[in-house]
Length: 330
Image 1 (tube, rainbow, N blue to C red):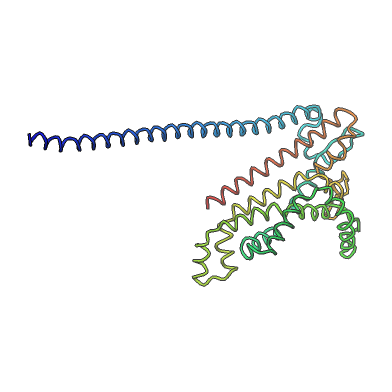
Image 2 (image 1 turned 180 degrees about the horizontal axis):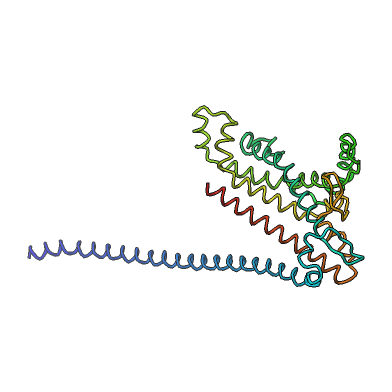
């Protein structure tokens, strides 16, 4: 009797303990199933989100191809007449159906790259000031808001401001250096565009400068480097791909600018002899003459001009992307 009682005393706790352990395992298994179910829902949501991104990306590719094909189809009448000589033709005379894009191609490249050259020092200065010297405070915040406001102003406002303010200033400057005081021209439009594209490179450059690891800068300071040496040897090498991307973004903005350039460039179909001479860009010609195209070949020539502008922008962006990739791999 004593032995059975002892066995009962021993086995009952073991049975209850096993039951507790079994119930714990079952509960853990149930929680594991819930976690698995939750992870399956997350996987399905992730797959749906990924498929939506792929669809959006393909739609963008289809949209660009649609624009490109539309420009080609609408340019066929002019292409049959002028062919590739349209690119280096120097005469634009819609009355005699003579169309050459060289003056406008030259005007587009001159104004865009000159505006880019003018804007780069200011863009880098603003980026370094806001990203390295004074990242916080009311003065940096005021400057940052001002730079962002510059990007938000409509281009036609810049055109009016250029006519009222910049043209008299440029005319006075041309008088002092012995250039015919026209006022409007390649140089004036480049100044206007330089002001317009500063925020793009400055904003991206500021973000890149702020992303430089503080450990790298502190290590350079601990070795006795000055602020300029840290900027030259640490910040600029680390951010050069991002800074160049900002320059490329600014150039793309300058290539497609229309209204502000149209109002201050002079709107002549002649080849500009200097940066102070009047000229025209491909975008300004399309804006000025599209509603005046009174016969199909004239309209097709303008659309072909848009095709050339599209191809120039694509080629420059492809070259820029290759350079950015080269900077990133260094």
